[in-house]
Image 1 (cartoon, one colour):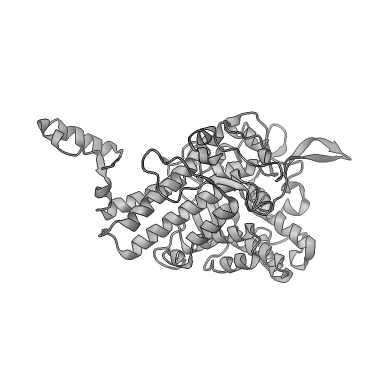
Image 2 (tube, rainbow, N blue to C red):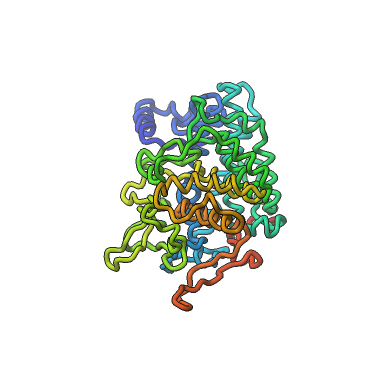
Amino acid sequence: MKRISIISVAIALVSVLTLTSCGDEFLDKNPKLDVTENDIYASEELIDATMAGVYTRFKSSSFAGGNIAVIFDNRSDDFVNTGNNTYAHSDTYNMTVGQTSIMNPGFFQAGYLVVNAANTLKENLEQRANLPISEAKRQQYISNCLFIRDISWYYLSQVYSQPYVYDPNSKAIPVHLEAVTEPGHNEAPLWSIGEIYDQIIKDLSSSAIAALPTNGESSFSPIIPSQPAAHMLLQRIYMAKQEWQKAIEEGEKVTGFTLSGSVREMFDAPYHTQENIYSLPFTNTERGSGNPASYISSGAGYIDTLNVRTGIVTIPAYHLATDSRTSFIKVDPATGRETWYEKYDEYTTPLEWIHIFRYAETLLNLSESYFNIGNDAKAAELLHQVRSRSIPTGDILDVKSLTGEALREAIYNERRAEFIGEGIRGLDISRRGEDFIHPAATTTNGKWDTVVVATPSNRTAYCWALPSYEILVNTAAN
């Protein structure tokens, strides 16, 4: 029977006292620090704790709890990685991540630990009878596991696959639909990004989503999977597939949320407003070293700096004095130049929540989707909702009057301005099958040049290579 260790100083102290007072009798009993699987699934409290453990896996600093934002902003064009430290994603920025790159195996392993934890709990909840939880909770936890597994696959596939719009049959990542609980199950063929998207859509069926809490219910919380969060994930998937009407349908199911008074409210205590759809909270003991403040956005001496040569902040309409988002831009006291972006500014005890889905994205996703079905007026109105939140007065861009390519450009640029430092820009570039472009060190006619660092057709540069250990143990991945 499998045993799962529970590390607890308090329990350990009690166990030591017990063992020193009862002679050899303890040899005939289960050690106090061990809990069998049967013990777990006979206790509602331990089932709840196991579900919480899956969440904790997902918000690992190596994965969604920091690293994802760092990876996708380093791949984007609004930050510049000024160092040569691979531990600080210099190879991510330069699009040279190979099988043995420092940050690659940790990210890959963290993602698959999430998937396996979700699969393990899901299978036990599906297969065991007479569980000490209600049927509603059982179904909710199964759906929670599906959501966590699916969003993990989503992030992994964005790094290891070419874009769906470039090639839906592009090989992406190994997929384990079942839990791996013992040796000998390393073989897992690579699924294409199209197959992964189809599996996510299948997983998040209407019945699976219905088991999750929705906004307005007493059980709703922005820190656990919910119906709105599932609809947001599906909205991203359908946008990647360019199935715009379906993306609209998913986005319009996200109801009951409002934009906060300022973007800053999302990153200052208590980090929660009516804009939070799905966020990862942290305590002093949970964060680890992967906080985005370690790389993106901080004071002098940090590696990722704002792209003030060719980035979004160089476009006048996105650097207005009346735009509250410019308050995140910091000036280097030594040079007097705008250099850092401080959305995450808690360096000593970084407790900012990582926002996976927030309502501003819902609106801008809908705006882009409506534009792509030819409804410019609706697209412009949704764009205005987000932009006017940050620029209530003094705007030089009348987005409500825009149409055609000018409107498309405004939607794309607003996404850059709104989500800078949150990793969305890198995801958007890949989703649209665009080139990754960085600022060059040269100028032409007084303007900074740019350089293409990766194109979708060049898989070696555009995608991370699977880690060498995966290739070694999983021959089906070749």
